[in-house]
Length: 349
Image (tube, rainbow, N blue to C red; front, side, top):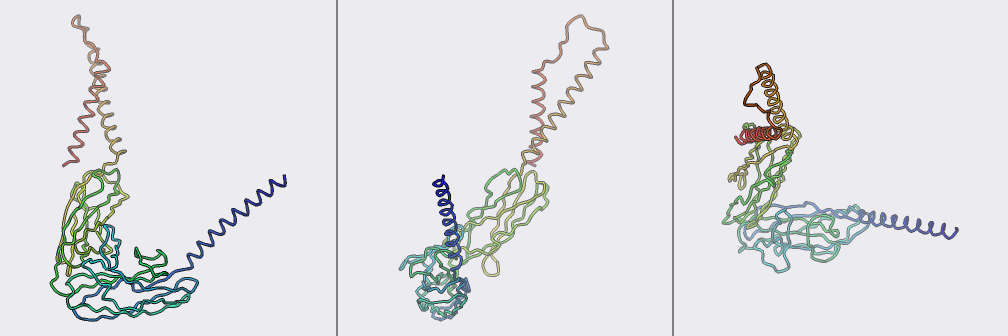
């Protein structure tokens, strides 16, 4: 009996220690962190000129940390907008990291302390015109970062985007504008847009998506790429815009998208598409009601005819037989089909 109690006590202590240890580890991870400002630098630049900025790094954790400075070129963006970083020496056409002059560290920052990190960029005289992208990382280890953002091994980054003067080409093309389905059971419609950048500078296409119902009434106006996400030169990026409505939606809808990009939004991209919102329950109730109405009319007419015939002298020949049950079913099915065709034709107008 005592042995059993000892086992229970031991298991309880083990469980408590495991949970407490995990909480302690989670708490320790929360107490380590670094914040760097600004998170993004976007500037125009001229050939042969030098530009200077200052980054501010703040230790928001609970212990003193050493950080290393790592420079990397950005080779592109995923369709969802996540940066991909170039390998050392890789040619991307958007090179910038080699132009950056900054102390590599290590930098020791106490809890709550902020340190300034001045740096400069000298644009080569033979740099290609258009977009150039790079990043400056602070990392807890002197290794090459794989991703950007906070929370990946205490790595944080400032993204630098320069637009070098010269022969600038701003040109974008719509690759795709669609919904993820054609027919929806309720108004929760996801619009998918893919934009290809054919130029040599970053473009940020954005604008309204207007939705109208089958009567031509505008029911919603959405904002595509409201956060001004960028599309890099020679890249394709996907944007998603969601329309949700708590009201009653039924029938065919049309969405018209009008995007602007470039200097002062002078260049535009437009497209239109149609989709359906057909709530299953509403359609079922409607067709069921129509079928019931036709059946009720049919039964009423049959009873009326039977009553009228009952007051007439019975014929000797030929004998009039009542309509069979199968004939009634076929007739009801015909009326139901006719109602469905009429309803569908009305919606397709």
